[in-house]
Image (cartoon, rainbow, N blue to C red; front, side):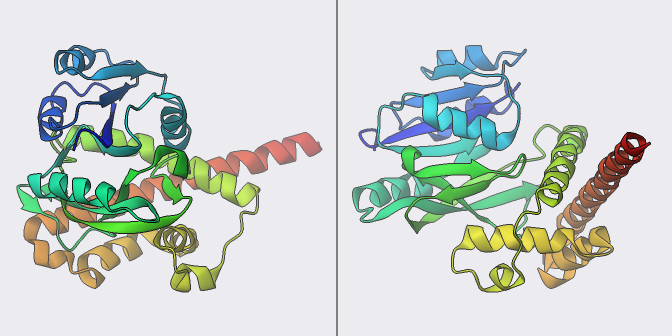
Length: 283
């Protein structure tokens, strides 16, 4: 496998989760840790494991990831990207090898991720478990400040096996702090989209053939819904069947609803500040 795939791991103070992540991709001979100037032992752990470390100050997700793909010198033509709190299962590792050996016209592959909370696989409550994580780096770009869209330049395939994700591995406080930051970026993104009059298509939200294009328009449609936090809870817990995930499913749906409310409040704050600046400028 190491003759065809490089690995890219994004980090910022990941001394707790990085060792297991690195162990899950130990089959690779070209691992790159793309670090945002960690202040803990992340870099030391990466270097001890034989990974190549590249550092850059984080600005936003799309810009950071795009910079990494354009500037990191990968040894192999394919890149498998994962975060430090994710693990490649052995089944996925075998699937990655098969995919690049018979990629055909595909320039990227979707991978199914399993998120865990309270020891439970959130099988139902996730909005979408599929992510583009194996790709030719010159054929992929990212858009949006946070929760970026992966835009492939070519055909996309789908892999078997799972990428396991442990977003609560550092505790609830860490998750809340991180999503407080994410909500600020989401609010900025919404404000930018509206200021630029970004094209939105109701038809594309439901009928776009490309999954990622459809997801983009669905998110824009969602931003326009009244009572968004409540809608999100109802969608995740009832429409998606989150109740089948038990207590973990309820907890996750509630957290996502709260996250959505933070975005709503921060978006209103940004737009209110913009209106005040316009009024003051007109006086």
